[in-house]
Every structure is written in C-alpha cells, then in structure tokens.
Image 1 (cartoon, rainbow, N blue to C red):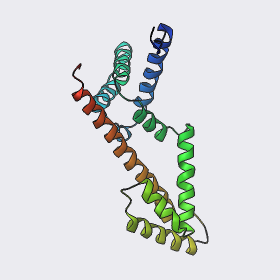
Image 2 (cartoon, rainbow, N blue to C red):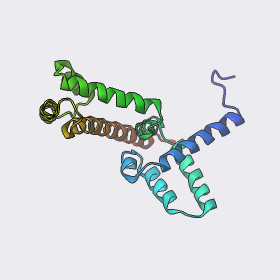
Image 3 (cartoon, helix red, strand yellow):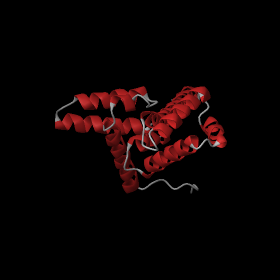
Image 4 (cartoon, rainbow, N blue to C red):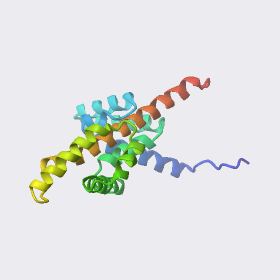
Length: 186
C-alpha cells in the first residue's frame, strides 16, 4: 500500500464543489479586477459566463470554470479573491496594514519606506515621498482632517499592492505553463 491514501469519492466531490464555489466568487469580480488573473483561459471562460443568460447554460459554464480551476494552482486565485472580497479576514488585515503604513509615513517614520521597498520592489520612492509631503502639508493646513492627499496616499499603497499581486500572479502563471511544457506526459 502507498503512503498517500487517495481521497474518498465524497472528499473528491466536496473538493470539486469547493473549487466551483471559488469560480463563482471569481465571476463576482469586475473586468478590471479579473485582469490580474494569471490564467487567460479562465478569464475568457468567466467573461463568457457573464455573457450567458440562460440558466442551464450558465450552470454548464460554471462547471467548465471549475474544471479549469482544478488544473491550475489555486494560491494566486485565492489571493486575488481575498484582495477584493471585503468580508475576508485577509482583506481586513491588508486594509489595516495600509492604514498603519500611511500613519507611519505621515509621522515621518524612516523605517517604513525601507519596509515598503523590501515588500514592493517596484516602489517609486520619490513619488511616495512627494505624496507623503503633500499629505503632511494638507493635513497641517486642515488641522488633522482627512484630505485629498491623505486619501491619495492610501490609494497609492493599494495600487502598489495590486501591482505586486499582479506580478506575483503572472510569475505563478508563467511557471505553471513552463512546467506543463516540460512535462512529457502532457
């Protein structure tokens, strides 16, 4: 007998149902949010799902999306869903992290830019410093009230994260394609 026991049929069905549910969550994302998906075939299937109006055809398309999802690494897809699902714990933690960085930037913490640079290699430090300087000046003039530059700083941090998420997802997607090309069994 092998060390790894195969999943029972019930467990396989539950896994398939969970993956199809993940596909259903993907269909709730907007086109702009879906563009971060590293798998163009899945993105096309989701766009087709959104176009279909008949009930049974939509159900078949959803099953097809589930089939496609079972063939890929789900980590990048789960990260994408967590990023845009405001009810997820990961999303809440991310928003709190952005808020913490914003407050530290406004308090002129010298370590936060280095921390952001490590986490986001594509960071434009000069642009970030300019936004922080504008936010500090507006905040001083507005006596601590939320200002346009204050919000812009938060949006800039979100955009940095989204760019990194897209870069990571693209890397995962291309490495999965490379593995498929190298596998002689396929």
